[in-house]
Image (cartoon, rainbow over all chains, first blue to last red; front, top):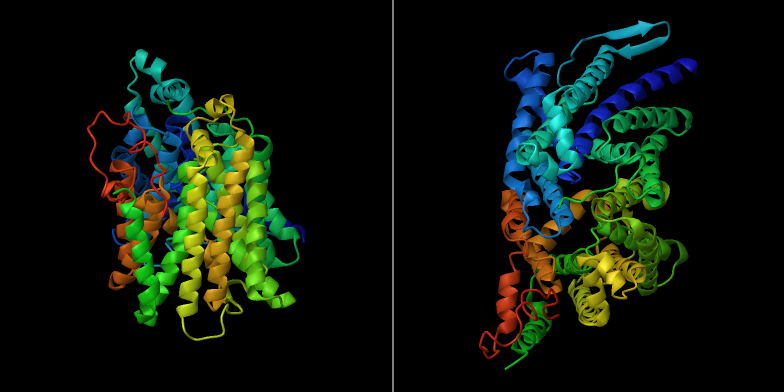
Length: 300
Length: 329
C-alpha cells in the first residue's frame, strides 16, 4: 500500500508540474492582456503534435523536438495575437471582457477542429525521451515522467529568471502594472502584449510535448489541462507566477492521492477532476478574484 | 406601413405551420433541431447579449433539464409534459442559485465559474451510469407515441414561439432595460436605482429556464439521450450560432441558430471542415463585425415599409443602432 501511495505521489508531482507549466502561461497572458485565454489547452495540444511530427517525420530527437514545438507554437502565438487580439488594446473597442472571452473561445474551437482535420481523432504516441524505468527500492517511475518533471521544473525556473532577472521580463512586469506608465518610460506595450501571449503559448507547447510520451497526443488532450490550469490560476492568483507553481503541484498531488484512496477506481478518476473544479467554484464564491491575486484590473 | 416586418414574420410562420407536413422526414428533423437550438441561442443572447453575463454553462442547463425530465418520467411514471415542466422548473431554480452565487463575479471569472459548473454536470452525468446510463445513452420515453415527426414539429414550434414571445415582452419592458443597464455599467445601474442583484439572479433564472425547457423537449424527442447534450463542443456550437447571427438581438440569435443548423446539414459532405469554416467565420465576425452578420439585414428588415424620415427625426442612437432590442418576433 505504501508503495502504491509513493508511486501515486510521484505521479501527482509530475502531473502537477506539467499543469503548473500550462497555468503559468495562462497567468502570464492574464497579467498583461487582462484576458483569460480559453484557447490555452489547444496551444498545449498543438505543442504535443508538433513535437510528435518533428520526431517522426523530421527525425529530430525527442528533446530538441520539444524546442521545435516551443518555437513553432511561439510563432503561432505571435500570429494569433497580431490577427485577433489587437482590438483589446484599442480605445474604441467596447466591452473588452466580452471580446476576450468569445475570441479565445472561438480560437479554441477553431484550433481543435483544425487538429482533427490535420491529425485525425485517434491518439498518437510519440517515442520516449528516455526509455525505461527508474527504481528506488519499491518505487518505480518511468524515466519519461522523471524527465518531464525535471524539464518542466527547469522551464518554470527559466521563466522565473526571465521575469525577474532580465530587462524584458521587467518590462513585462511594468506593462502588467500600468501600460501608461510603461509607455512613458519608453516600453512599447504592444510588443510586450505579443511577447506575453507567445511566451505563454510556448510554455503550453512545452508541457504538451513533455506529456506526449506519458499519455498520448490527441485533439482533445487540451480540454482537461485547460480547465485544471484555471483551477490552478484561481487558487494561485491571477497574475501570480509563484502562486501558480505552488497551486499546480498541490493540485496534482491532491488529485493523485484522491484517486489513490478511493476504492472505486474509475469513479475516483472522474470525480477527482470534478472535485478540483468544485474547489475552484468554492474559491470563486468567497474570493471573486482568487487567492493571492492582484485585484482584477480591466484593460482600459 | 409600420409593422410590415411583423406581418411578414407572422405570414411566414403561418405558411410553415400550414405546409410543414409537406416536408420530408429528414428536413423536418433538421428544422426541429434548428428550433431546439433557436431556443437555446435566444436565451443565451438574453443572458450574454442583454445582461452581459457570459455563461459558458448554458447547455449544461439543457442537460440538467433533459436528464431531470427523462429520469423523473422513467422512475416515477409521471406523464411526459409534467416531467418537462419539472425539468424546466428545476433549471429555473438551479439557474437562480448559480446567479446568486455568481453575483460578485464578472467577466472572465463568471465564464470560468460557469465552465466549471458545466464540467461538474457533465462528469456527474457520465459517471453515474447506473442511473443515467452514461455515454451509452439513456432510452427516454417519447413525448408522442407515433413515428411521425409532425407532432414534435408543432410542439417545438409552439415552444419556440412562446419562448420568443415571453423573451420579447421581457426585453421590451423596463426589466429588459435594467438588464441592458447592468451590462453597460453595473455600478452606474445600481446608482440609478436598478436592483442589480435581483435582476442578475432573475436573468440567470429565466435564461436557464428556457435552456432547460429546450433540453426537456430534446430529451423526449431524441430516443437516446447522452451527456453530449451538455458538453463543451455543444457550448462552442451555441456560441458560434449566436455570435455569427448577432448576440445582441434575440431575432438575430434565432436566425443564427437556424441558419447554422441548416448549413451544417446542407454542408454535411464537407464533414469536419464545416465546423472549421464556422470557426473561421466566428473569428472573423468577432474581429470585424461584432454585431453579427444578420444584424444589418435585420435592421433593414425592421425598417421595411417605414416611411423614411429626414435624418433630424429621432436623436441619433435611439431606436436604431444603439438599441439591441430590435423588434421581437
